[in-house]
Length: 245
Image (cartoon, rainbow, N blue to C red; front, top):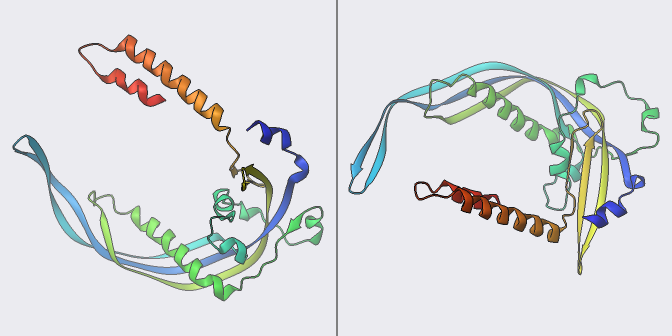
């Protein structure tokens, strides 16, 4: 939106240190379920339609293994952990991960010229979330061994026993920019976040809808012209040009 361009100011971009916990964990994982391997595929005609059928072998599947997870980062601010439509959680999560292997020992001088948020969540409050994320990682690791079951695997039980864990508190740097767009009596708050280490950027910016509709209409007209020049009695695929708009 042109107004967004005009009102953008680097003075409103803030460097913020966000509190995280960096977790290393050793765990034992066990998955049990059933998987299918396709052996035959065929079609049968029923009236004017055809139906596809599958034959498959059914197997009991179990995977049991030890897993080491390093550098799992979890927000340790209640404000960021709360899932709400008016929070920046999704934007902050979209610029993950940080290169935590390059973290350095805390020095208060690093925070000069920046703002920071306080860690207000204890380790015990975060343990259920960390276990859930570790279980997701273990499940993803198990999936790499299931190529033979091309019809999929359904896990009936999933167990993860965390044998040991190490927690470290860390401040991770983010650039944040906020912009308030007024739309009649309402206002919409836009956020843009930049991972200061990896430069990964994500956010929302206001769209100029008249321009959007104008460009869409122009593309639709061009698509219609292209369709008329390429359409013949033998094919109907030129109708796809209309989808471009």
